[in-house]
Length: 289
Length: 168
Image (tube, rainbow over all chains, first blue to last red):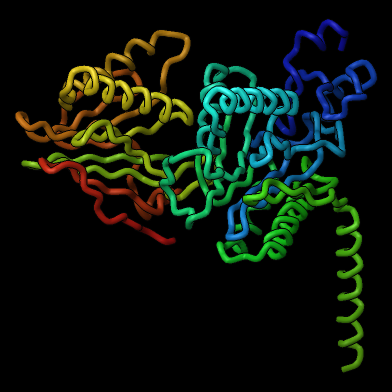
């Protein structure tokens, strides 16, 4: 690909979507410019794996509400048409002290729209003297993305926030059990959904299988963290477009707290050891009979 | 696959809609409400493409409410249906048509109950019963788990018990 082609073709498409021409840039790492990254791999390698069903957004992000607040977790792999563009990207972006956004889709689009949203929320706060609720922020993002419907823009964001007393009365349609946390899924195709549990990305079916059986309101903070970690780990285990590390954020009335990024490589080796150990144990048992 | 149904009776309209909000093959929500309250006695049921449904339905909803604020009385169901159809028609041949299928159900104090069927090509038909989608149970490859049911009569809109059919 020549430089001119790189500039005029659409910005990087994530995961399985990149079967057409793509330019390999816009990774999260600011030091890698388009001149140092290789351009798109030849078609032969990117078309060798047929898709079982159309699934976009090469990533795994998840968030759920429970009695201790909202927990958000995501993997850290940025992929571009079969190659890992960045193994340490950040998919959970804090927007302000009590609102966190998980992003999935095109990396550059997500980073840009997160900044635009942060700017608009700050302007709202300065103009009106109170912070916009999570529901309002989701509505704002949804309306800002609506004119781009039908274009290549691809942003699937999950907004997790705590609405303080200063945000004023809002519609709390679903039972939030007197808690001020809120969770919204906003997509560039126009979807805006409020819920208790969301997982977005190519690894989301695998994450859903862990979350749907384990998440309930009464989890403790440690249980919630371990289930979120397990869900991301299982998704990275099976999904090729998710991997590397797991990030976790916990949002409460005091704001968001970030857990240290954990490399899942360690977990794979620990599990491998466990399996090997179990196999030898089983063999010992049969021998002793 | 989404489903809407409406049945007009002698002095009521009964409407039901499924509760699934899906994104490709994943159910993102099992308790999503597809009915939009336009006024005390008018409901708009809306299915179709992901963002278009909410954007279009909320646009109609806010405009109907604005009419009431400006003029002091509410739009009748027939007028609301024609207003909706006109908006769909205007956008149809623009660069951004709305791909939505609608049922509008309402009770007019002079004309009685009314059910209007509209589709994404902006056709409008007043019908005694109407539906969008496939409401099969046991034969369809995908079974819709639950439905919200509402009744409109001269007293207003009433929520009826949620229907849960098929296997959970």
